[in-house]
Length: 292
Image (tube, rainbow, N blue to C red; front, side, top):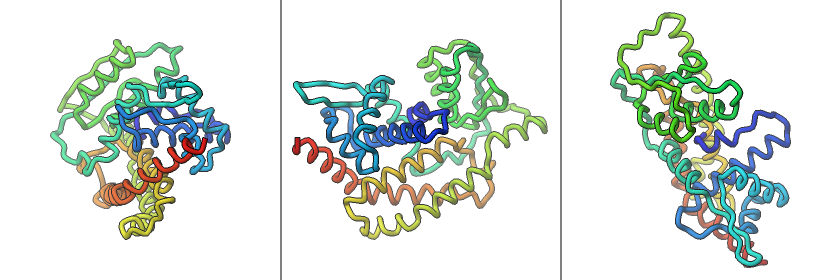
């Protein structure tokens, strides 16, 4: 999932916490996919109605709007009795940065033999900062060699320095190198962090879950009333997969690795349902507002 979606993850496995996290992820996805920077803020009543399509009760939907506002993801505006919401500028940029990877038509399969490595030190008592940095490193395709030493086979030099600056972290070293000698235990440690078998199983499961939807979507057989829910849930599934994938070059992957096939399926569904999903989103949003 994207950096912003990672930040919305909850360490609790209680049903209530999982439900809250799902509602927040859905709302962020809806804003990211169907609202654009510079457009008017979206009315709260309409957003509550849209979330109802995903079986989220009105009280929970309003609580979700409040939580995301408190966390700096949304900003609230009020004109008379009308309350509206929009993404904050920082949240918008995070989502757009994530979207470039989520909706990329190809993976980063070529490799020039160079690695990007980061070593850092964080205050022991700042668990939130540690969680945020790890989430953002994961999203940038880094994997941990050791607790505070992470590596990726992609050029992330500028991007990781940007993330360190955003988080106010100055005690770190970032370098690019070709001479990275992984001794047997170090190689095993990195391969364990990559979890290639788990990733392959995740992509295979994605293909199985959404193959029928792909066929119906490309054949024009998904009703407009269903397009918004089916597409948004599928995008969230894909975002979660991509967020856990270090996007390894082909040289590190088995020939049967199903990522390319899953990506094609995802893009086919996403493109086929984009227009009816957008229309359904706007229909629900403004119908609820007009009905007040």
